[in-house]
Structures are given as C-alpha cells and as structure tokens.
Length: 208
Image (cartoon, rainbow, N blue to C red; front, side, top):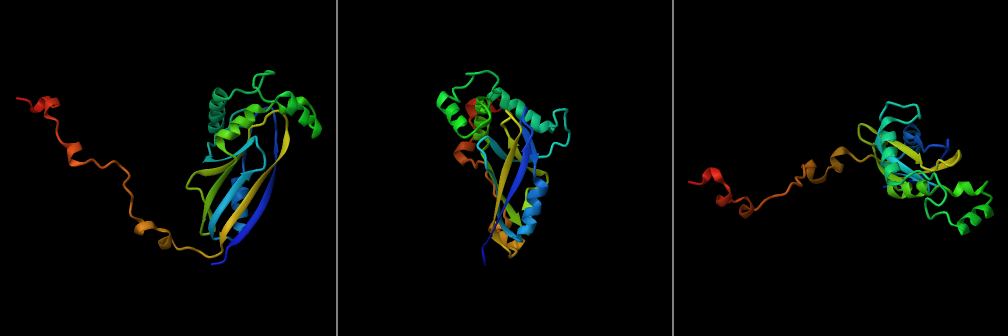
C-alpha cells in the first residue's frame, strides 16, 4: 500500500475590528478530492499564532456582525474568559522589548502588538485539526464544517491556512474498518453484586 502526501495552502483575508470566522469547508473538501487519497488523514493547520482551526456545526443564521449565531455565542464566551484588548496595560504582553521587536520587523505601529487576547484564545482552541478521510471524502459526520478563526481583530490581514493530506489511493472497505466486527462498546459502569446489594437499613418500604 503506497503512501501519498499532498499539500496545499489557502490564502484568506481577515477583516479586522472583530474576529473573523472563515468557513473553508468547501475548499478543504475540494483539496481532499484533488489529492486522490481514498483512505488517510487531513491536517488543517494555521500558519499564525493568533488563529485557530475549529470543526463545528454550521449555525446557518447570521447576525449583523456577519457571524453565525453559534460563532457569536462562542465569541461571547471567549470575551468573558479573555476580554478584548481595549486598554493599554490591560495585559502584561506586549512589553517594551516586544514592541521594539515589532518595529524591527516593520510592523506599522505599536498597536499591532495589542493582540494578546487573540494569542490567548488561540491557545485554548489550538491551531490545527486532523480529520479522517474515508472513501476519498472528508469524514466530518452529518453537520461538521471547518472554520479558520482569526482571533486577531487589531487590523485587516492576509492569512494562510496549511492543508496536508497523508494516505493511500486505495480504498479500505467498511468491513475492514470495523473493530470487533462493529460490536458496540458499552462504557457504562458495571456494578459488582456487592455494590448492587440492597441496604435494608435505608429502604423504608422493606422495614417492618
């Protein structure tokens, strides 16, 4: 079974002023199809430290901020945990040395380092997701969409998303995929006879 590696980059434009949620599901599925891989994995990874990759249901309804309702619910929760960077010295980062480094790499101003909230949020969500490829299709279940989330809302920016597909061009049959012939695993706690024994002193109905 020959292993194949297929890699592509997606270029995206974030809007700034509010975190941007890019629905890249269509593009990821097209890349999987173009790879020719029938059985394998697809790694979807951010090139940036203030961005995340998220697999979640599409919420369909969109508000005036151009966010799906579920996305805005998520943003509301993140703002409670990690407030938007709105005031100088609200966070320890960035310090004076980091600000100087920003000037050295030709950042347009010190304000571009005021994205601590984006860095912290990306830590919570992580920068990548890995999904399974079955029969040449991305296996996201019935409702999953792939989102590239740019938490950095200091300014509009060009962003890059990296997709790496590893697998084989050969199909694996559904029967071959089944573990223990598809037996359903029962993970519920199994009580011992002693744990299930009646405690007469606490069972009023049986007291005489």
